[in-house]
Length: 204
Image 1 (cartoon, rainbow, N blue to C red):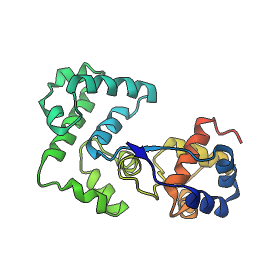
Image 2 (cartoon, rainbow, N blue to C red):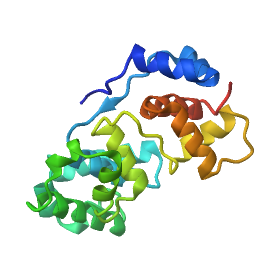
Image 3 (cartoon, rainbow, N blue to C red):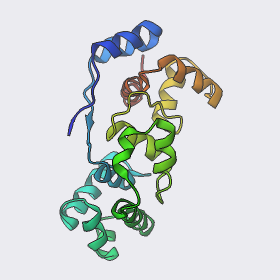
Image 4 (cartoon, rainbow, N blue to C red):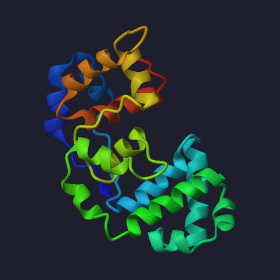
């Protein structure tokens, strides 16, 4: 684990392009976010977290680590489905974990190349894995691959924060693209501040 790499350059650039983002940056200061460069364990954690609260996800993932030891493709494949389900995982999520483990253990899939791919190529490659949609791929791009320009339309917190911050009644895809362009090439850092704003119930 290590901090997501950003600092004064990104914060200054975002503040200069938008006054409301500047308000958030002035309010929160530097927000440290961690990166897990182990793409497989980060993916497993993301799958565990799908459609449940953050606290529940932490509990289930802790139980999973107790059950399998090191979170590796080999360990996931070697663990019985019932033992995985006993960690609090649904049958569907167990199938997703096994599919991810199959994908990463297959020598034909050169996952080391993920670190060299463009954002579009990454989303295409990652969503080939059963249970990985665009949102999960984008979260991996941020929290494992440390991609600098990810602003997810599929993330409810991001949409909620933008809608509130800019006084919108609704946020369509075309409007969202305007904000994505405005925050480019530091969309990921903008995401950190928007998430924090959403966590604070979007109170200016």
